[in-house]
Length: 420
Ligand SMILES: Cc1cc2nc3c(=O)[nH]c(=O)nc-3n(C[C@H](O)[C@H](O)[C@H](O)COP(=O)(O)OP(=O)(O)OC[C@H]3O[C@@H](n4cnc5c(N)ncnc54)[C@H](O)[C@@H]3O)c2cc1C
Image (cartoon, rainbow, N blue to C red; front, side, top):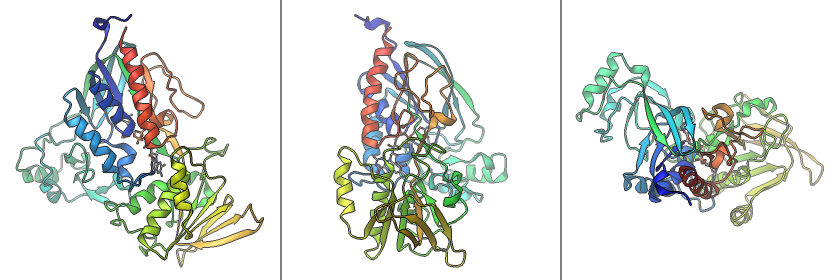
């Protein structure tokens, strides 16, 4: 039996999305020290940017806030935002991890009063809103952010504007001389939970993403529907701001396609059904059409699928659109498709077309800085180099509840790896 004295009691978790957050609190509540390393200035990952999440259609704060409270109440978790793992050396039970921490230029004295933001004049793209809006160069990432602390954008550092921002803070929270640093953490195991990125739908030229303003990917639809999004939650056309009455969803935009993503992301069908309900809840007279290859809804999500599809304002058409075009004068978008059930060619016009894009693992672009194993699509294998454990969407496309379960399983494997 392993001797508890040979157990390194620190677990490093890379990625503070729902998977990493869940893993961090589970590990800490099992008595381990945790270093939670997150690239963004806030925790919550992609879930934080959603309007609501299925199957219960809760707002993201619902699930996230419980975890934030568990983090606040547990001094064993060290949260490192604006941080990335740079180098991993050693082996299971005895890793040395170098973490690069970027400056926030705001320290923990920040009360989130917002006076610094009023003093800033430069506008920068709001990445939380997928670049659909701008924000001041001194900003709170979003109103439910954890930690609830402002960030000063590096663009203004060195300019007189930064001094004005500093002077506006009554609490001595702005620290303009903060610099990038490298921090070393010793850990027995590493849970890698760096999640997913949306597939870039502009790669499918005949769908017009990036060319037509009223053709948007599904992650943008989440922001258009969110009360804290660029339109205050009113789902409107990108071309002229008119409310959307007729919406289409194109499933498998790049997925299950050998030229793009050969796999199914498992959540896009449900995401589109959910997003259709955003519009129909907002406008009783609106309608939605979903163009699909097959609808995939598994586990307890099937009941959600049944509930939404029974709404007669939603039409489900089996067929993969061949072409999408936008009328430059009216902004209306035409979808051309062969209805596979009737064999008829259909052409229909919509105010907005949403492309249901799949998930690409974070590790397709940024690998673990150590020897690690991946599948052919860049997903990090769960069973990996001893002591390095993949979890959540970085290992396979999944919904939130599967990610939470996966996080718990990863913690058990991490605890085992800590015992040498
Ligand atoms: C359009 C759409 C709608 C969806 N709607 C739902 C829904 O309604 N219900 C549902 O259950 N699921 C839904 N999902 C799935 C859901 O988004 C995922 O299950 C969830 O985001 C997975 O969480 P994660 O923590 O694994 O990854 P992420 O949410 O991607 O979190 C990963 C975190 O790691 C950070 N990170 C990345 N790289 C690094 C790095 N190198 N170093 C440090 N940190 C890093 C990121 O900033 C991020 O915070 C939807 C998916 C899509 C595409």
